Length: 498
Image 1 (cartoon, rainbow, N blue to C red):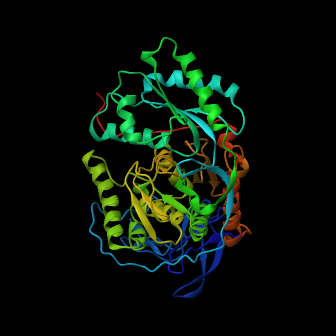
Image 2: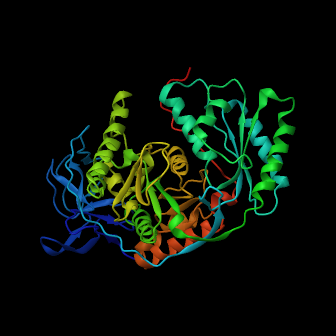
Image 3: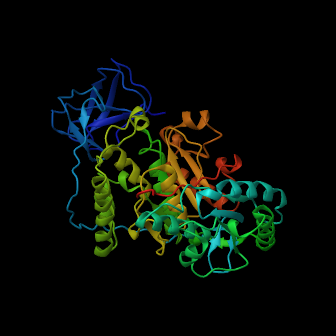
């Protein structure tokens, strides 16, 4: 096992793989000075940074080969580099110049999974029945209906799931549009073999209104129930759910090309290892899937701040570059409009794990994008249209961003974490740990351990293992949150509540 890692030859810090104690000496190669020896002047926690060269106050601190902030004070080689002596160097709204970088992902041999072909030409990796409330007032009814209906599932139907949420009424403008768009996206999601849309009757986002967002639908697959219009909503709901179960049970798993897969990519509770292990491993996965004609979606825009130019310059056209600039600056403007600090990040858990600034976090976060060209830029709630790597507008919040990925069409979400979390999303959510300690401690949460990448494992081997694991999940293997019965969803709340 390595004791430390220097990510880029030009970095003036290293990351401790294990705790480096004061007085301990390390030997490393330096791009300008050759082999050098550095003695730790204080204890350096695992996942945290140690200076390997003297850094003057105001000078850049470099990690991943890029600036992650400026020194608040003189820092000596061997000192711990963290929030006490580094500050962000980021500004507010910026102007950008398109400096395209050529990226090529060579086509690779086709791969397959066992999924469900839907009648509209889409494919699913689950065959579930979803109950989607139009308004929070009927959440308890939806949950009760799902609990009772699960005793009656049959055939290939895997589960009946309710997705409660607090919205659908007392909203205005774009805020209400978001709710309607996300609900319609979920109703149309191919992981659901059947959907019961459950309304109250007096809400703003009532069924009649929501149908305009749903568009054309299969009447055998989507049923509607307005609780205020029937005498016994539980009995009527049970009847409709039985019809949906009967319909969906006719679907069988079939061999389907991995080119049909759409995978969302998200991180949360990151630590100092996330940008070294789990996130670049997901980037390797993304490249593999794209080489086979598949699609990935990267989101959490506020955690692109400071690394956005790396994505902008991989845009396959000037038009996409301009859309990415808007993606970044519009989200910054959202912070400013709400009188909030743009760079109120990283979180306390991130800092405890070794992340010091937003640049530090973002440069690690964007590793999930791999090396492919950006082929699409999506607004919040917009469904993916282009194969390849897509960028999606959504916040960093884990539940909101993961729901947004599902709403945009992701069949599965890959969620990297250094701290651990039990949450789920509307689609299978694969938890990938950045360190082995977490994977061992919380094996009821963690599905895949990327921490072995600082031990003996190789990236190419682990990238293929993750790809194979995702194909197994797409073919029906349940992830930890599914085994626990967790199914969460959250909508991006932006506006006034009446």
